[in-house]
Image (cartoon, rainbow, N blue to C red):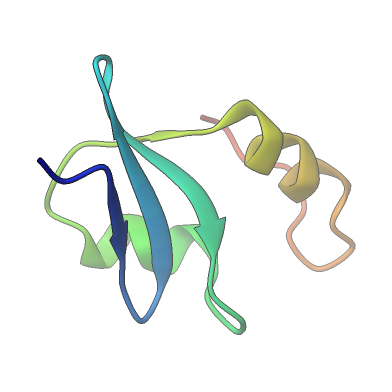
Amino acid sequence: MVHRLITDLAVFDFTPEGMVLVELQAGAGLEEVKEKTEAAFTVSPQLAEQLAVSPQGGRHEQ
């Protein structure tokens, strides 16, 4: 069974609730990951918190 997917853009975990974005790779942004990922996913609360305070990321919705 697959529990984690690591791509060029991001790291996703597979949970009972579905696919969860847990990390962005260096140079990747949330909008780019959304555009290039066909599967539905949510953003982990920890990553959302990091993005909310990121000076270059601005605020993002989950």
